Length: 320
Image (cartoon, rainbow, N blue to C red):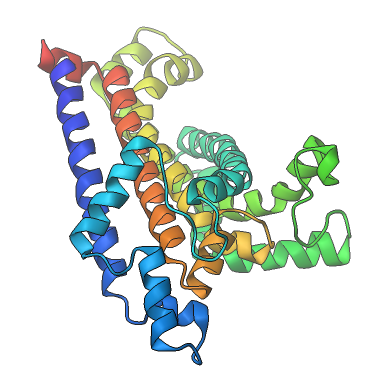
């Protein structure tokens, strides 16, 4: 398995390097002048040139790229154009909302999808299976932001169980607390989990059905093992291999996919930070956030590969 992990680690590092080049190049090609946007249309050429020098925009692109990557490797980030604060501080502050939201959405997705997927597979071609597949198809078809609006209309406007948006904070000093913070994330998490749970439920059902057709499963049944015991002892372990892969990708998608839902619920997470940075043409923040999201996707995929190798004994055998 060491050879397998070494190859995956090499791929991980190369992907990050290529992604950094692409992110920097794409933002460099964007039209417009950051200094001009910050100072306004009435700014003089001299003031624009002075601000460009202060922001380091007068240096060659290759030098700016090297400075950016070198800072990331040292754990240092440039100051935001708009906030005059290191982007790392801004991102860490917003991740305190985005990461718990994604984790809560992933927990809801996993619990709902695995339960429905196994339930449907155990009742293949019966009314329960048909019902789960129909519901999952509806879930895939509904956009998260539209479902989020429906949740607000029902639970915030009509029933008034929760607020329509905003985040009170994790501490009582901020006017919130742990319970209030989680409460404000429940509806956004449900909106995010709907589509992901629908997809994962279908994958789980297909994986379980495929494994149930294997010879060793029929042998276990022929030896007198009950259907339930066969399902839990022999089927699920092997069926979880493709499911783990999808779960890893979904968690990465939840981190990156909170942008729209956070804006619907007015949550001060990474999503709103990106929107504000784009509106202010704060390319330093946009660049670092996009690179962070790329790194999250790559790291999650690497972790999934490691888990895949631990679950699938064939990878260990091939490395021996």
